Image (cartoon, rainbow, N blue to C red):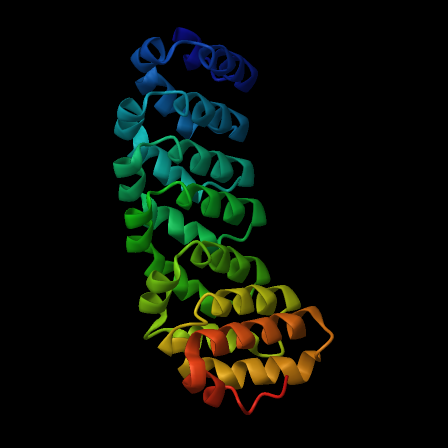
Length: 252
């Protein structure tokens, strides 16, 4: 690995590209030298080094993970995206260990990074995923559409019971997404989320007013209007007479 000591980015980049084709067991012998390239001045070298580390077996990659996680602060979007892709190669335990750092990337300035953070977190097994979802809810107070949609995409992966338990004390964060200054896409995704709660007490408590507001503002013939109608009808079917009484004030 003496060539990696040559401080010319095209030399280092070429060496790292060659290392990527090695067997994982052979590559493991050179992992320490590759990790050192994460501090290279040229972003393309850092990028190539991360690609190489992503080829390691998960157990060896876990040993390098602290250095990889630190690269989430890199100035280059392509580097941050590749960090997340590399962390996605960890086994369930390793990925869960570093999930808090990945969750923070939902608030990244770059949409590509946010999307990759969602993709990486989606690789967690369901129980581990649930542990980190409360931190995702905090992003529902953000102002940028991309941050909100990333958070909502992750919350949509929860089953109805888990979602109801999670939002029991956090429902105002969802309700405020229906304010007029939020984009149509955010309101649409938030409405999809509420639809998963249609047979629960939380829905009965919070949603009639919200759905009525959407129905009135968007109109019955709009896509959101049709969604509201479907959600209310589903809630009434699940709630029987009590459900019908709860939603009786919303004229369908």
